[in-house]
Image (tube, rainbow, N blue to C red; front, side):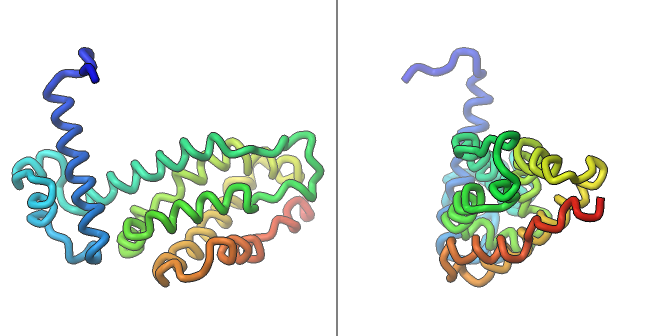
Length: 202
C-alpha cells in the first residue's frame, strides 16, 4: 500500500506509536484491572520507551480516555447505519425514545468492550456516554420530544434525566460483569425510563 504523501512522516510515526500504546492497553486490560496497570507495563507491551509515552500522554488515564473516545466514535459511525423510524410520519405509540433499535447495538458494544468501560467506572468523567447521546439527541430524541408536545426549553433537562439514568444502569451492569443478557438490560432500561408522561403538563 502506498503511503499518503500528504501526511508528514513524523506525524505518521506519532499516530502509529499512539496506536501501539492503545493496543498495549487493550491487551493489559484483558488480564488485569486498570488501576494496577503501570506506564512501565504499557511501554514494555508497546515496545516504546517512557519518554515516548510521556510525549503522547500525561498518565495512563489519558491513554484510557483516548481509547474510550475512539471506541465511542467507532460506535457513532455504526449508529449511522441503523435503520431509523420516519419520525414525522410515525404514530406516537411507535415513537419510543429508547427501544431495541438503538439500545441493543449500544449495549452490545458496551459488553464487547467491557474491560474499558469497567476501567471507566472508577472514573465516571471518562465514561463519556454524553458523546453518543448528544448525537442521538440531535437526530432522534429531540424530534421525538417535539412530536410529543414537549417545549424546546424543557428538552435538554428531560434528556439529562434520561442520560444520567441510562448511564447509571449501564455502569452498574458493567460493574457486575455484564452477567445479564443484553436483551434483559434493554427491557430494564425501557421500563425505568418511560416517555408516556411527556407533554401532559404542557
